[in-house]
Image (cartoon, rainbow, N blue to C red; front, top):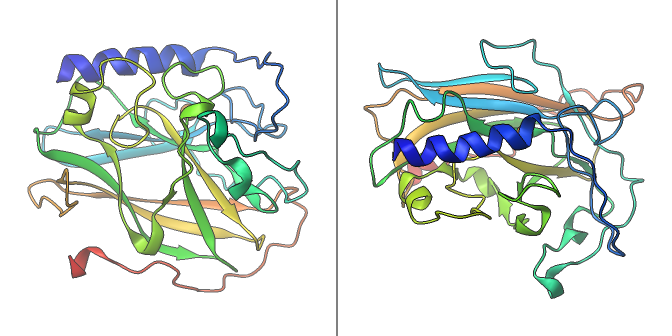
Length: 264
Ligand SMILES: [Cu+2]
């Protein structure tokens, strides 16, 4: 299992560190992927939650721009692309995603989840690493759709973005499942459970400051029930309107996400 995760992560690093140039000529209109050296809108590059499990069975998450391999970087808010972006097209007829769910919304895909020190840790078969929003504050509703990597990525290309709604009602989303990794030896890998870098799409109708508190935990691979032998990690990520000169709407203190785990 370790060998598998290591192999996957090795490819991810190549993709992440490469300067990605989109040379595709296509009639479709798709949203711009975040890239390591910018490329989404101006300076907006990738921002990562890098996940590992230490020998004391503690989940550790380091947040930062780029690959930020060690320690927590100053956490800057991510910036929504304004709702004046082009109208995206429905690619589902050709096996791609239906990008229209992002139309008319302020969107952002800078945040990616990936393994830190991949190959040096794993979880047992039947367990998985889950990511769960435990609180959301903001002036409106924040939607999240399952993404992937970038247009040129063979691992999770744009066509592999499911755009399935995730985190709905506070539901956890499965990021790494060793059994999923073992049963998917070749790309494109599934966004959910693959443990590779996945950039989900955040969208809202109401611009403003949004903050999400995430819990990253080890739980049952099917039910997501927390395994108490592992200590979860919690991190906060925030998004603001772009351009930054827009008035930041005060926190609405809306608890849009309820804990669902307790009811399971
Ligand atoms: Cu990334």
